Every structure is written in structure tokens, then in C-alpha cells.
Image (cartoon, rainbow, N blue to C red; front, top):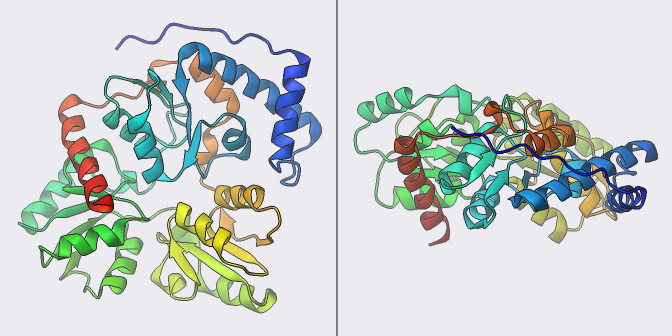
Length: 350
């Protein structure tokens, strides 16, 4: 593997730094607690990244759980896993600098095999992705012959390659409904809690109609229903939204369940005196900046993997990418994984 040549971002002018700081301020970062001195520091980094990004011919996709200064400072597009998968597949730039976690950057590489994909934080993993291997999926397939394997996008390239179709929290129900139109049993991996929620929605029995795995998200499996009840008493009329990776006990008590993009659309279209987002903190910060006229009740957990990405690390990856920053996927794995992703696009949108 040949590393990209080193490059150096020019020091921005004082005026340029002030413009970037003012733009971050206009996006609501002051309301999130960012002080002027910090905004100027971040503005300088954002200006340098943008300059080098143009020189490299790079595009920067950013997941909604990322830090506000990354979302509002350097992103070319922002979204959930599904949206980013689609947009990365349409990217024209030769470089993709993925502000997210490893499985997302792998997905970008799978859909863009000829492009250079950089991951600013190589150690940014995912508890769901790490919960299952390709060998374990092969064993499950041998135990349930003929049952299609629907695998959550929060998985490694190896796991995707062993799957029939990939799903996201936003399209899992639709895709499983289509699979059940042709099959009596489906293997759903690896999120056990999401699988339990889907089983209830579809009227399927875990262990018989839907085969589940034992994986969970370290962020979403830590929420409990008692907090929801307490919140309703303290904030009358509050609309509570939960991610589909939360437990069935909690999901049964909220007003809306879905993926991150679904949750933002619900907030935009539904009037309420308060909103509480039961998910990673980054989505709440994004919602507060997008909807400054609405009031939000804090209820979130930080993902340490997502928050490991910083502007400093993005700049370093652009300037002098190390071997660990360059995302590679075995071509044999890549081809099979891409088929499962393409099957997702077909079933979700067809």
C-alpha cells in the first residue's frame, strides 16, 4: 500500500479565522457552551482543513454523532449510516476523509474501491461491529439453512460479506417485511435489542421466526424506562424519541422510535413544548442547532468512539496520513460485501 504524499495546509489569515469562528457561532455553538477563544481555535483548524481538502480533491462525510465543530465546520454532507453510504457511493472526489467510526469508513471503501479512504481515528470502533465475526455468521447459516441473513450496517466488511442484505435502523422493518414475503425465518444480526423491537413490530417470535445475536450498542443499551417516566412528570407534553437500538422496555414507553434521520424529521414536523432524544449526545446537539426555537431535555450518552475524531486529527490525516489512517478491504471480501449493500438499496427503495 502506497501512502498519499504529504502536504501542508497554509496558515490562514486573521480575517479567515474570524470568518470561520463567526460561522460556527452562527450555527449555535455558543449556545452549546463554546467560548470565543475556543471558536477561534476551531475556526483556524477548519480553515486549514478546507484549504487542504481542496488541494487534495477530498470530500468529508460526517456522521450525525460527531462533534458540533466537525459537523458545522468541515462537513460536505451530514447524515446517518444509510445516507452517508449513498452519498459516498456517488462521491466524485479521489479522497474520502470519513468522520465516523471504522465500519463506516470500510463501507465507504467498499462502495468506492478505487478511491483513497482515510479514517482520522483508526481506533474508532463499535461494540456492535466487534460483537460478531464472519466465522460466527457462517456457523449461523449452517444452523438455519435457507434463512436469509439481514445484517445491521454497524458491522465489519467481513460480516457484510457473509450477509444477504444490509439494513439500517431506518429501513430494517421495510426490508424484513419484504424478506418475510418469501421466507418463514430470517437471521437478524447483530443487535439483539433492535431485533427484539423488530420482532414485536412484525409479530415474529425470536428463536423461531427471527434468529437473533447477542450484540448491543454500548450507548443505547444503557438507557432505562424509569428515566422516561420521570421525564414525563417533569416536562408535561414532552415528546420522547428513542433510537431503535434501545431496549424493548424503553421503546414501549416513548412517542417515536427510529433512526437518527427519522428522529430529526419527527422534530421538524411535530409540535411539542419539549423534546427528549434518547440516543447519542451528538444528535441532540445537532437538533439544538438546527431547531433553535425548540426546547430539548437532556437525555443522552456519549459514544467514545465517535468523539475520538477531532479537527486536529482530521487535519493530520489530510496532511500526513499514516498507514493506520488508510482504510483497506480485501478485494474478495469487498465484492461480496458490496452485493449485500446494493441489495439494501434495492429492497429499501424499490
